[in-house]
Amino acid sequence: MIDGKILFLGCGHMGGALLKGWVNFGGLEKTQFVIVEPSQEIRKILKKDGYKTFAALQKLPKKTAIKLAVLAVRPDVLKTVLPVLKGKLSAESLVLSIAAGKEISFIQKFLPDNVVIRLMPNMAVAEGLGVSGLFSSPKATQEQKDFIYNLMASCSSVLWLDKEADMHKIVALGGSSPAYIYSCALALQQAAKEYKLPDDFIAQAAVNVFLGSAVLFAKSQGSLQDSINKICTKGGTTEAAVKCFNDKNALVKLFAKAMKACAARSKELAK
Image (cartoon, rainbow, N blue to C red):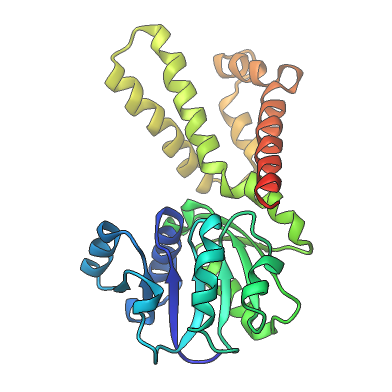
């Protein structure tokens, strides 16, 4: 890999999570980054945290050597910013895109000389607990692939994909999944209101149930099914509840339906 800066083109929710993950878990220093972000509010926060920021690509100093350019803008913005970005890159600059639905072939129409790798992470990379999928253009060297893989492995479970089309599966499984879990917590919270307990207690309990359960499982030695079995005593209360989830495979079917809808929408956005 060439020496130079890591450019973040956009640093909103997902870009910010990735930046945090790389700094907190990937061993990178804040001085290694330059960030182009149009939001003055976000720039103000980043500058306070010690990052070098710019309002637009055009304001980036001409002599800035870019080792890695991270495309973290909205997919619909790419066709506007990529022609400008081309003038800022050398042929050795690596491009990493987290723009959902935009294939490598689309990006290389604007950046034909650069190696492009696609990344689909989720927000939990900020806490070192993410889920990520990677796919690279054929020109990627093993050194480039190892560089990106090691960065992502520092803050997430990561999988190299054999087919770019499998990115839609990673979106369904990992990229969108935090919202699935939040939806489960919200459903538990709303269902519990039937029992007329204080609203503030119910809200906190719903959060603690998921947080506590995750910590317990992380410290366990077995599978998810083992953890369920430990709580489900024969003929007990938990077993009665879990049987409702398992009746006609209801919970699995609901998640499968949600994931298929997510993947289908991802494919639509790619068109």
